[in-house]
Image 1 (cartoon, each protein chain N blue to C red):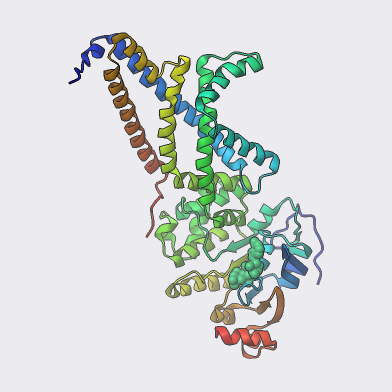
Image 2: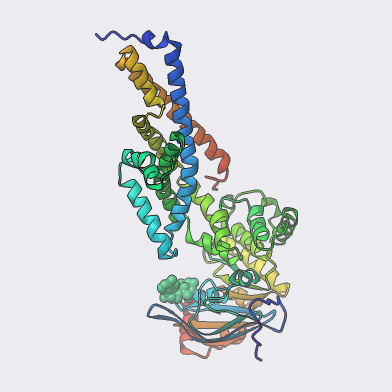
Length: 258
Length: 228
Ligand SMILES: Nc1ncnc2c1ncn2[C@@H]1O[C@H](COP(=O)(O)OP(=O)(O)OP(=O)(O)O)[C@@H](O)[C@H]1O
Ligand SMILES: [Mg+2]
């Protein structure tokens, strides 16, 4: 199925069956070829887990999808918006494609609820009351409404990551990108963040998750994608991927992490 | 043993008044210069940002380098006497002096603020941008508050240092605290006593500044140090 290229300015949120299309995407950092001919179609509501060795380009790939990085060749289409180096409405796109980082990137100078309020006010131009209400709704969703008035530094890593998820959800994204959301956490906190992500998946959110949490992948993912050296080497349903990997590199990788 | 005669100063209300005016003048010159200087300093710091175009970056860097590597007294003479000649227009002495002080201060504050901006984690910009915030929103709502908090102690010492350099404006007849001291000393011939009084007054003002800044910090950055 092909996406038609709508004008970048007419941003139709969450419409259509396809959330993201990548076609022949290539990216270089100087001479270094990070992404090589990446093709990927993400259907609406689909949950995709991306894994692969360090340096294989997983972060780069999802950072390209919300335009924190630009690609040099091929096309990336997110919700009908064609991404390009000089695109004008990158902010609009980023608000539509929520992103959760390994290091949370919460704003330490704002309380938890203000972390949720600020982007809503600035980007969506919501009133303070409305932004607070939405913020509290999503803090309740990630099960920490009682921490609303604390500062991020006063929370545990797991709680901070849940706040980061809530903050992203406040922008009403139609797609969520996760870049190793649990790998900076102490082991005992990984569970609470994964539970939040499973909860989110149950709402039908389109999700692209870079993670090596195989339990999560088996439980939630529709597809697992394995990347190596900037290429998608293998993709399959989680069970087939883990139990019966085809590619030698996938096998070697799985042997390492399992 | 030297015979201290402080009463030579204190018995004349005119001298006390002159010194009090000196304190006030030094105060508002420093405060005004700092207010404008910090605003200009923020712009200078932003102008030197990594992704700024060269036509903004080069003048920002040159400006800061020039002002930090030339004597304040020369800058003062240039702004107060040179600029009016060049522009064919005369300001009041006060306005020219405030301008000179602002220009000088801005270069120093700019450097401190620039260090602060660099010290804010890159992830903060990405976090804000990923939420759809624009570059300017990111700078003003996310980066600058953290940058200023980080360098607030350096800003305080920079402020004190710049305050102490304002004594030079007495050279062109601005009636600041240093000028007042000279005025009183010339009339009482008690130079030693007068300079002891000046030292104490300057020191008291510095303590007052430091106290106010500490208070300001706690009010402006309640989140600072709130870690588990
Ligand atoms: N800004 C950059 N400039 C130059 N090279 C970069 C830059 N960012 C990433 N790279 C390189 O690109 C490659 C892919 O990086 P990327 O962060 O996408 O890998 P990754 O798969 O996410 O790895 P990890 O599991 O360690 O997070 C790495 O070799 C990295 O060194
Ligand atoms: Mg990565």
